[in-house]
Length: 302
Image 1 (tube, rainbow, N blue to C red):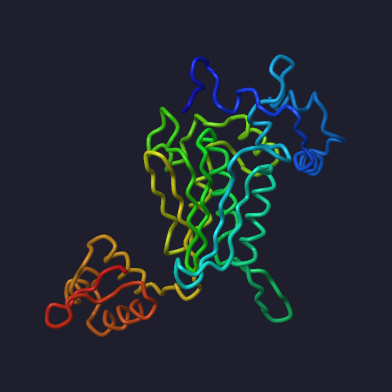
Image 2 (cartoon, helix red, strand yellow):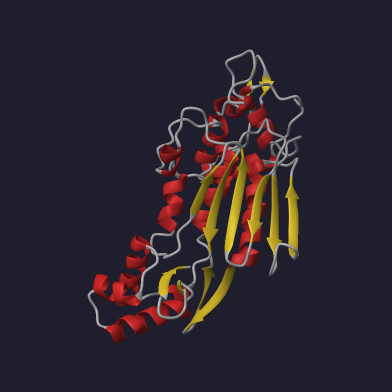
């Protein structure tokens, strides 16, 4: 629910059931990023995590070292969903620590070292900034009064991140996808994430994810359901680099759908041999496929 029953308060604003909270991780992060000497009651008040009248709220509990909330269920699959390589259930701990452990698991499976000349550098199969934004987005915008976990499913070719709760009331799907969010479901948590530089600016998460993929041919995908939101981050493969002819052919098929070779040649204004070479290279890169083999052969996007 967007607002607590019987009052004009969101769930994160309601008093925490547990008032014996400690904030070791939050304190470390505030000292590291903001340069404070120590976390005290006045800073907690400034962050809207504590009030003299109600004590700690649910936002504070989510940031505390221990709490009673479901968190993130993260699974790394092998060659199929029946092969689970690793699984972590991150719950009852600070959402800051949950974020940190997600990044650690990301580095384990989606980062490798590449040697170029005398230099060794780290390469991400999926842009780390896109993954960070997607996880932070899920933590900031999910409905915390639903006893369900954020699901992060890691595959060899993609990561799927699903968070409980649909869009906040008053925001359309287009506004969400275009980065026009002006209403946060959890503004207190969002403000803490902003101050800690976990997020750059309110409402820009989707735009920043898309920007991380600006040079990639396969883009992130978004699914908005009534009770959940899913973000899919594909692996960026170096062998997807295309020449100008391949780009032109791929764009033509994206616009027109399934087409014969003759139709593609006319649309691209190229000769038969050039079209065949380009189409065969796209098939080798698994970007397109043939359908209806024979005299009626057509090409289409995979």
